[in-house]
Structure formats: structure tokens, C-alpha cells
Image 1: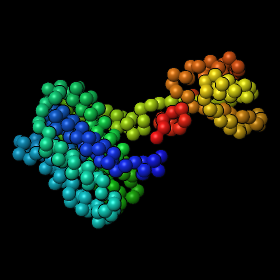
Image 2: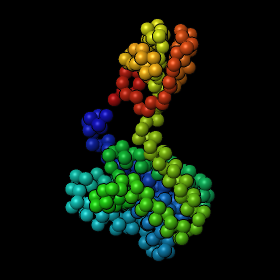
Image 3: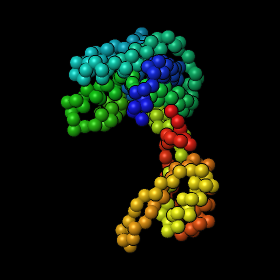
Image 4: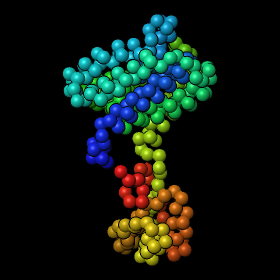
Amino acid sequence: MNLLLNRRPLWIDAILMVVGTGLMALAIQCIYDPVGLVTGGFTGVAIIAKYVTKGAVPLWLTNLVLNVPLFLLAALIKGKKFVARTAVATVLLSAWLYVIPLWNLAEGDYVLSAIFGGVICGVGMGMVLLARATTGGTDMLAALIQHKLRHYTIMQIICVIDGIIVAVGIYSFGVKAALYAIVAIYVTSKVSDTLMEGMKYSKAVFIVSDRYKEISDAIMTQMDRGVTGLDAVGMYSGDEKCMLYCVVSKKEIVVLKEIILKIDNNAFVIVTDAREVVGEGFLEY
């Protein structure tokens, strides 16, 4: 998968970063900021700074001012290659925050702000991550802190930093806004994860049966799906078995189970989710 990503043209990554940062800026400028949803990160700090200064300090300026010294420090500690793409994404986000006019899309509705803001920001963040970049902020700060405090993970440090920012947001905008900000953070993470991991789900199936040959033949002929036989040993009985493994689409799982039960209603079947299956009959690059 990494090899496939490395072969992707640079202009595709550039488009992903431009569009992704644009969507993130739209959510921050036109949804989060008007209702005071502080969702962590340097953009959350920017929203607080704008509120404290009564609009004198714009979002783009705070985001840029906080990130510039951080990137210089990261370049010294981690190297220029570490910050290259993230620096571009950060500048793009600040540029979008400068260009996009202030427009209250959700019209003060906290529920709409949390849900739609989370979705838009999540899609944008997912696109930036697909371009193998981040928008700096607390992610970069956490990486630098973890360089000194190696007994903590980057994710743990991010949670602490963002938690502090959200707590300050409670003081500035109240508990209600902070609670909806947490909802927005959750929606954002789920949407970005889905975009990264793939939205096309398949089903992976493990089948243990004494009639494995008949079942595999039926799957290959009736469903035109490949099947792999895995050597297995029943630890209780000590018997050697052939366990079948195959991947089918969600729509085909019902047909597969019918085939198995028709041949051997005592078969032991395990069905699990499989994300982003690459290969013949599924996703192809």
C-alpha cells in the first residue's frame, strides 16, 4: 500500500491538500467560530484569541503565528523532511482562513454546528492525511514533546494539550459550547478515519468444516470468488483441519452463508469486517 502511495503523482497530493485545508477552514471560519466551538488544536486557540481580543486578532493570524516558531523548532530537531508537507498544509489552512469570509452557516444552531462542522472538517482532515501531511498545531507540538518525554505516546500528549484548550474554551464560551465541541471532535475523528480506511466495506469469512472441498468448489463456481485453504489443528481434538478463508462483498454474505449451510449445517463460520480490500474483484489501483 505504501508503494502505491509513493507512486501517486505529486499533483494529486497537492489537490488533496488544497481542497482538504479549504474544507477545514470553511468549518472553522463559518461553523465553529460563530458559535464558539473550541475543538482543540491551534485553531481552537485562535477562536479563543479572537473572542478575548473582541475580533482584533483574526483566526489566520493566530494559526500562523503559533505554527511558525513550532516549525522552525521541528526542522532543527526532526529535520526539514519531517515538516515539509505539513508546512505547506499549514500555510494553506491559514491562507484559506484569510480568504474565506465570516459566514454563520449554522445560524447559531449548536447541533448543526457540531454535526455538519464535524463532517466537513473530518472530510478535509482526511484528505490532508491522505496527502501524507497534517496541518501542524498540536500534532506537531505533541511530536516535539514526545521527543523528550518518550514514555508518553504522541496520542496521549495530544489528548492532554487539546483537553487543556477545550477547558479554556469552557471558561470563554461556557459548558454548553464545550460539550458540543466534544461532539464535533468525535464526528471529525470518525469521518476522517472512515475516509482514510476506506468507505467500501467487505466481509472476511473463516469456515471450518469437514466438507471443505465441496464448500470451496461451490463458492468458486456459484459466486466466482476465490477461496484460500489454511492448515489448522483443533487444539481440543488434535485433529488436522483445512480452514477456508474468503472475502466477499456485503451483499454476497447472505448467499455465502446459504451455500455453507446447504452443504454442512454443522460448519463453524466466523464473519468479520474487512476494510479497503485491494485486488481482483474488489478495489483496483
